[in-house]
Length: 474
Image 1 (cartoon, rainbow, N blue to C red):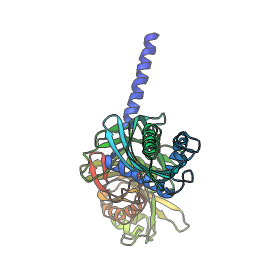
Image 2 (cartoon, rainbow, N blue to C red):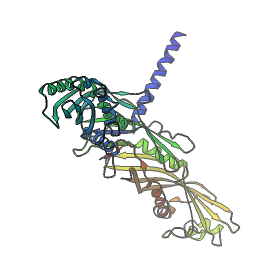
Image 3 (cartoon, one colour):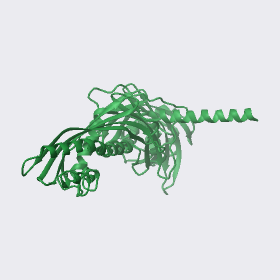
Image 4 (cartoon, rainbow, N blue to C red):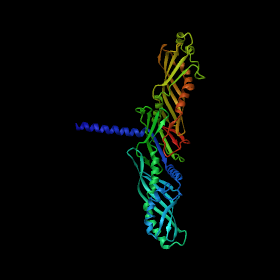
């Protein structure tokens, strides 16, 4: 009994391991160069400070004023704080903060080294007159990359140091006392490094907020949604952070689109191009699942009648009768035809070096429209279509354009007996080129929403195709 339980337990572990491995191999990979991370955090910092005027008395606004100002970390210095005991200094407050300069350095396998440089202008009153202090602050911290239970990557501070690069003390009226100067300098050197490290929490929160943005649900038109989630702890090298993404495609009713069975892919991004700051790889499995969502909603289906599409030969029993004599024998009077085209199986995306292929099985029903409005089945054609796919980016979406590479016809059923189906290849080819493909391209041309991370703009991205992977370099 124990042996049976042990075997079952091991099997469960193997199944779980397979699922985890499959999840990592079936979706997308996002790679961020250190420059992209640094620019994103600096941009966020600049945006936050521009929304809140820094040149105001402390406590009245500003990203860092609220943290450093009156009632904050520097509140301990004045109005009853520590500096009140030094030569009668009172009313000490922050009046200005220089826009912080942020730089990041990736620590391979560990996390990120953060550096923040700013200048803090402080003033107050002393017995000798109005006191003006300018302090240069350089704060550094080492952070470790962790992963929350929800899968979201998160940076956590391990150690922090603050260095005061320069302290300029000036008395606007009267002479500066050497004793006062020394006391203030010593006090700031002793206190500020300890109380300024929490400033990095602001930067870290911005960075973590940017990392959090990758876990998102984006609409797939009106048919469903795509959920991007980080599947494992990101990989950190000296040059970039790499995140494996699970991609879940859901239909509007909540049903999930499964990846093709037995079609496991290992995603390995190629080396980043020298000018690239971000790189996104989308697997063939993921692209197949998105097309399948469109197919299941019937958006790839099409119905055409005689005269609907310019350039297509007449869709009548007379025209078809000229190709299939049995039709001419059955319908002496010309009747219009109706063709119902549907993609009856899930499309399959195949990516090879510099080439994208979409394979579809298309069912084409040919029906005769009777005088009273009823439809009589004539035949059903099966079309194995291989379409060439071109990829581009626009509006933060991956857009697809398809053209016919090859089609192969088969006769699924017929009310007029067997006939040589190859005689209809020209007509079917015209219908595919002039009717079916424009309809398909309108649907897939709307684009596949890309993951939103750090507001990366992929609109000017170079698109490359590798084995089982479309890669965007931005």
